[in-house]
Structures are given as C-alpha cells and as structure tokens.
Image (cartoon, rainbow, N blue to C red; front, top):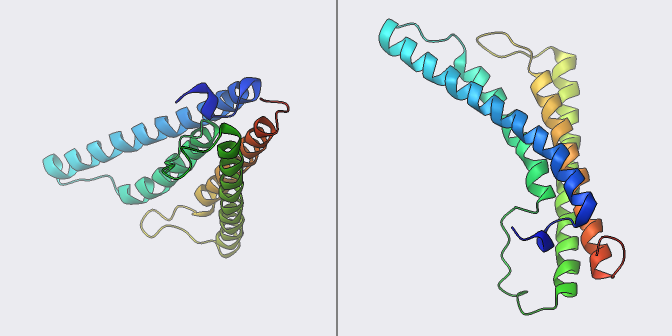
Amino acid sequence: MAEAEGAPGVQRRWLESITGWIAIGGGVLALAVSILVVVSVLGRWLFRAPIDGDFEFVEMATALAVFSYLPLTQARRGHIMVDTFTMRLSRRARDLIDAFWDLVYALMLGFCAFALFFGTANMFGNGQTTMQRQLPIWPSIGLSAILCTIAAFIGVATALSLYRRAKGGAGA
C-alpha cells in the first residue's frame, strides 16, 4: 500500500508499531491453534485420543486472532475498498469520503465493542462456561471487546488524519 493511502507521517508509524505487536500476538495465537489442531487430529488418527475440547480452544483463539488483526488493518487502511466511482475525484475529495467511511467503520466497531463488553458482563455474571472443558467464556469475549475498542479508536484516528490532510492541516 502506498504511503499516501494510510494515516500519514509519525502518527502512522506509531499506530502501525503498536497495532503490529497486537497482530503478531494474534499470529502467534493462530499458529498455536494450528499446532493444537494438528496434534489433536494426529492423536485421533494414530491413538484414537484427540485433545479433549480442542474445538473450544479453536473457537476462542480464532476469535481473538481475528480481532487482533483489525487494528493493524485499519491503521494501514488495508480493508477492501471499491473506488470505481471515486477514482476520478480529487485527492481532497477522496480523503473526505474515506474519512467519512473510516468514521462509520469506527462507529460500527464501537457498537460491536459495546455489545462484546455487555456480553462479557453477562457471561461473567452467569458463570457460563464451555460445554466440554468447562472453561469460562468471558475472558475471550472481554479480550475481543478490548481489541475491537482499539480498532474503533484507530478508525477514528485514521478518519481524523484523512480529514486533516484533506483540509491541508496537520498530517498532510
């Protein structure tokens, strides 16, 4: 992705540094889950002894991994965009349109984070656990809520950066 497309300058480097470490954590988690699945399948195939509750670990870890990639993707503005109708517009107009949609995206992530925090409180309050291993569900939902909140703040930051660039101010 070209430098001009993301959050400009120092802000972009700072956002990508922090969110990069979060994404690396998600990648390590995804790798660990992959190893867990391979070991479980081999155990089932060779010894008729899979890892008990492997699917529960996979569900929770996959959700966390996905939520850990969202902040970096937003910091780099790497989500899929269709610009068929805006390609001919000026850079300023495109920046304003992109800032608007980054803000809409941030608001949606904020709504999702709110719902996840509400779900975390609900799961914590009623003590809900996974079916097989009896693992508490709330920690994975709570971490997902935090990661979603971070992505929402990054969305606001990229929207503000694009808006400032469109107006010819800081971050241009």
